[in-house]
Image 1 (cartoon, helix red, strand yellow):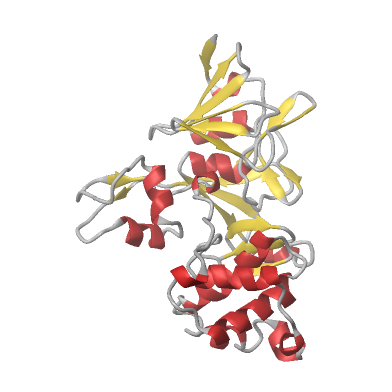
Image 2 (cartoon, rainbow, N blue to C red; image 1 turned 90 degrees about the vertical axis):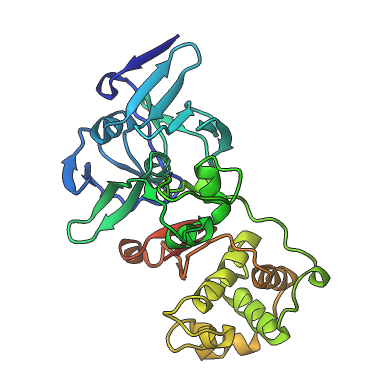
Length: 324
């Protein structure tokens, strides 16, 4: 039995977002530029911020539907987006597709919790940080209107995502765009295609051996104890910097830039021996495999928690936060 009810009457509190939302420790948010007090406290679990979805959806003007037969809750907006989930499951449905979150929707004291950033981005809202008042800032993003010369690649680059993710976000099957066409450009993390296995060396363009050796050693000293995905992400931070106008345009220049990577200046890098996984990660990154598009920083949030207030988080892998 599907019941459509106003958000303020639903007896479940659901929390959104797989990405850290940088929320304040009380019950305040900045919603559409206005400081908003919620009746329920925000929560922080393992570095991720959670919000009471019922009240949050009401404040954002989203619709909530509850199916009593399946215990499923659906949140939808006026742009045609629909997110369905239930407590205790990692599986979600989004705009007709099936996806999986890193962890199941939680329940505590009769309330259900779903990570903040995911819900906001699924409803085409961006999550930022208002440093002055230490508030998470939630801002609805209006659809982008295509102009002459636009491609999925240029629009994706401007919004720190990938062309494939942008096409998936908008249900596109081809590469063509029409002037005046509207695109939703906020892409929730679960829509980003997982990196494919890098092609074998003889199937890729020739990789500079010196760049590979140096990048692999940096990965080793910075992420030797991290999972492979974390090693790949560290390698991509270097390459993202190479492709950014704000940093040197070579692997060596980025790594040896003053005050950037301590091991490069204290002698640890020169003494390092890269493991097989570090070499594999460096080679994959140099071959074009990027699991943290746009990220140009990484740090351990437990050791440097204040940095969370100064960056936009792209992804958390292992002990590292990758950000821009």
